Image: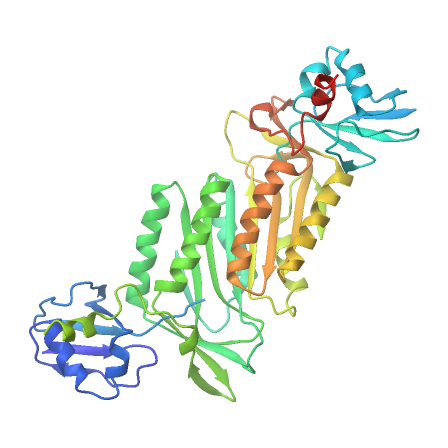
Length: 73
Length: 73
Length: 151
Length: 151
């Protein structure tokens, strides 16, 4: 299983999904109406490392974090 | 009389001179061997206002300050 | 060094301690940036969420970048509510030379603003409202939308 | 506000007092630049002469320039000897917004370096040696040499 966490203002509990890569996760998240509007604006970390490759393979136990637009300071 | 003060590292006591403008003062200062090497590098204030015009007329009681290269901080 | 605090920062304590920590390090320039909550838009406070593991990586990468130029960076940030006129954020650079310090503090603060994983909320009548209009997508945002399009 | 001190600056006192002075002014950014004497070239201290009337005009012009952008500047500088690892100089900007503060602190510190009427000396074995190689002619320098040439 892959654990998906939504950070900051995204009002969604963590979810557990069976996917092989980020592209597959993307399709699942697009199905959720509360999540879909965020996706274009969100960055992604896998196991706390920021990722750039939308095809990145995932393996059991991976933790995916969804990071919405930021404003520190 | 015009009073001329040498600031910072220029080792010269203030002097009193009779001159009508900065150009005339310049000629007097060029005669002094200890002052001459400084002149190209020095800025000038008259009555504590920085001046840009080398022909600036001077009047009795004016105070001219000679400001060598700076390094604050 | 990266420091996180619940609620507003004790600015004088942090500034002075950082000064003392580097008192013998022979840095010629110390530039802190102190961010304070402005009274505007009827807010009583701002509130912050932080994702610490990614913030730590971001900060460590900056420390390495500063080190290449002979400098160091420090930062402190608040978690949770920070009332108007108190401080949520201090970033600082220590460097042997003025030019490097001036360049780094600007880049450090701007990159922080754009890429540190921190979320800001206005607090109005005790309610927390995401500061969406002032927030910026992080570098690489849209990855999951791209994934969708590539099908 | 411009402050001159005999000998090294009490950095924490100055930083904290400036912070308190503007605590209710609703500035969002406070950036001090703290300049500290580095141990190098076998010096025991640096020493400073200041021509106060021209420094005051320079500072007042900067205060007006900052005000146009909704900001203020403050500075403190030492007169006389400042031992290695103590501070001779603090410049600061307070501004509603981060961008203006970052731009002003850089311009303020650089213009200070180039045009504030302050002379620096290395102190080695108790002797004061003009730091000629690190000094810069002020804007408009050479006026009296020009006068000569124009004859």
